Length: 222
Image (cartoon, rainbow, N blue to C red; front, side, top):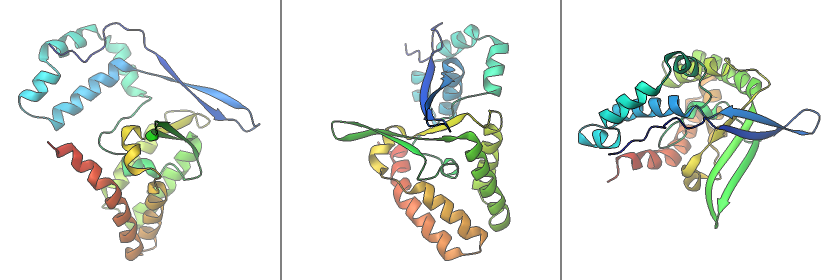
């Protein structure tokens, strides 16, 4: 029987390094929160898969046993301050509004293949960028889903210290899109909408769509 949930394993802490203002490199720590993240991942699968496949991947017996192992108070605290957000089949466009092409970028390669790309920036900078984009969209395109997505992710970032850092990790899709101009395209698209430049906004969207729609279509491939 499949059981994708953790079993009393110690929760690991991930470490990244980021340059400080005095020129030295400082470590930053992020709890893995594996128990809560697997719970949320299972709920996400419930929404995207139907029929017997979900029962094979996440059997009810395994799900119930996992729930019994969770401490309700600890789980609630972890959900309230979730350190890691995940997405499948691409990077959400709202995330690109938070980062710039000149942010610290790490390209991880293996045998000539890009296995992932990690872009890191200070949370304070990301909040400021996100707020600016929210204000621009509120003027230029208040009906767009991107406005709600950006508002929500900025509120999430505000839970943390401004001098902390946030890392956008492309994962395996990096090999299909890198080098990637999506942060610039999202920024230019939002600026164009705020200026009522529909041609500029459409051009930015076409570039984004040509890059990411083929990847998202893989979710429906057989």
